[in-house]
Image (cartoon, rainbow, N blue to C red; front, side, top):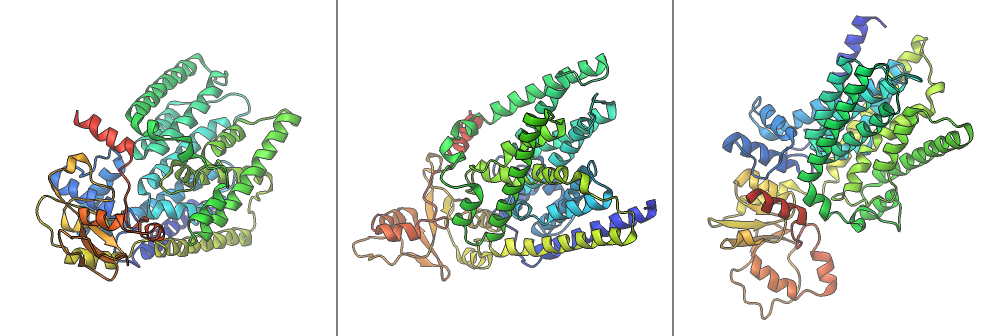
Length: 497
């Protein structure tokens, strides 16, 4: 394939991915995902006040804030940012897959990853994870390239510079991609220490790198000690059902995600079985296979809790990378070289099919969003609250309120630091309990068909009269009654000292 043809093909693919992602996200005038207005509100806060309203050190927020300056609307520019990141993810995945397959096949595998249901959750809900995933993909490419050597690992200055750059990008994007990136480099350090380097200078440089890496790991652990202390085995693991079955049980609208999780788990088990068989009977364990196996164990554990708020769910989103590598390693000797033109065009036709699928997958993921932002907008439009108030509302509503009204909203119970404020609640679905005997400090105000404004102390009176069935039906995600995570409260206290 000539250079001009490659450039033209790459430009066309990039344009198609950008436009399909942009068109899918533009089907709604509102921000994407449950945290869409979190990013929008954070961006607006930074542009207007020079700081984020909620403490967040991820460079992704700074990048989104800078990028938003290029357009008149923050929400629109955030969608453009995600579309550009989708293009970046495709090419990072393609570059990774080219280690084991020719370019057209690598592009096809990258398109398949783009169509993954896992990736749609990142693109619509977890943008920081999504950007971190791009850098993690490039880091894997940097690590796997020298590991392909059967004898010596050959490293040069350019390799060290690129590896340091993509590692830093993984670390500062999101906490989870930071820990996975460190894990990858620690495994790589093992192969270095085992003696697979060519010169003493490289050995010294590798030891220096491992030392710096250890310091970064210690710093991350220290910075996230409150989060780590708050993690319990009960929150991280669920042993009564494997991950795909948990997905199907937790959310009936997530059938594509559950089915994909089953397929990925089957593929992982096949690769792990082959690896164990080779290691025990053939006495061979290639370094590339070992790294992929360890990543599968860390990110795709079938007994991780599938609740979206837990680490296990987000680690499974990252697991599409090692699982894709497992697939290409299983089929490495069956992948053709595409000498015939018809084969070349067939592969790119399949790639186009995957990109089209990613468009509809993205649409589906936006449609099953649990928040009707049109109704939220109508409710917020009718709100009129006094100064120094705190509004308690479900996640998504609170960020929407912060973005449009620039007031304080929270999807947890009020804390001690909010003493002295008037606390209101936006209740979703006013209960049909008898209200006889309840003296309201302020009469409840119907904002929309589903949303009602009520004083928080009045809500507590109503809550006390709910039957067990009404409590189960009412006090869900849309009517939060839990406290903010312990590690977040501890982190706030540490930063205020």
